[in-house]
Image (cartoon, rainbow, N blue to C red; front, top):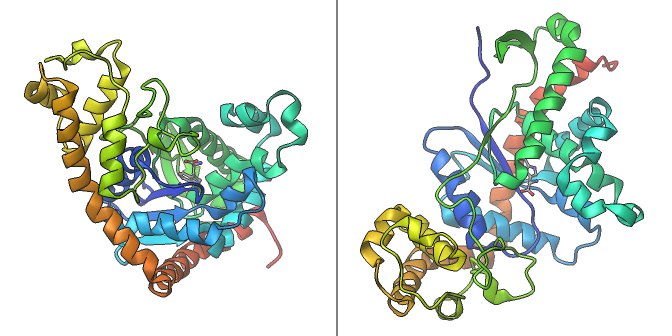
Length: 355
Ligand code: TRP
């Protein structure tokens, strides 16, 4: 039984500032995966226009995500970093997937329902409905096998599997005839597949970083209060101010993780400390159990600045020289395009377009 070559793909939208939640929840994982896998990391600008068509600053937002990737340790020479619109094959495959996927699949997506529910239907674009189909195309145009994402993307990845599976089944004879398929097992069924069943890679050092103002809400770029998040470009003074002002409760830290139950803000700050120092929450509480926040917060500031300031400095350096940064993205785009074209060349034959 053959197998698909392992390949990691993930995407981040160029909207809003990247914050600590994005860094700990996603980018750090992207960085770690490079050691063992071939990786493609994409700034998904085509997705950014699904929610809002006109952006004043899409170019600078795109550069800023790319700079964050590189400053965090993604190697754009060894791996690939590029922006989605530079590879038109994503949109081409998405169109075919629009004809594979069923409207009901799209309408069932919770993210779509949240944004388009009720009378909003006239307000949201057709692109927003088709968003998951483009996301499936992003991944499958490279026949990527592993996708690191936050848990909010799980449903979109299941849909990517549904699309891959329907394509594989509907075109099974064509795939055999063209000779471009791979024999894989799906569950305990042997299948002759053109597209792999993508595996989500969910979790990581801190899958959920919460708001500094409300430990029950996720840290988010759309929160009205900038004090709720630590942005990757915040300077040391700002990081320090935000941590000092972070909401807490009056009690000392517990010595065991059980004692964090019902204390979401304490749990969040301990989780952030643990993730930033590559320790477990247990380790952190062994060190700080019994201490007041007046002791823990300065330690957290010191750690956060230690980890984040080299990244923000490197980001600023990269963003100061857009010629260099754009050249990196252009090179990534060229290499991505060559790989995507290989797939599309076969897909056009499988679907049966006249060549
Ligand atoms: N939907 C993802 C998000 O909002 C972004 C994304 C687009 C993506 N295409 C992708 C993630 C492909 C992983 C793989 O986070």
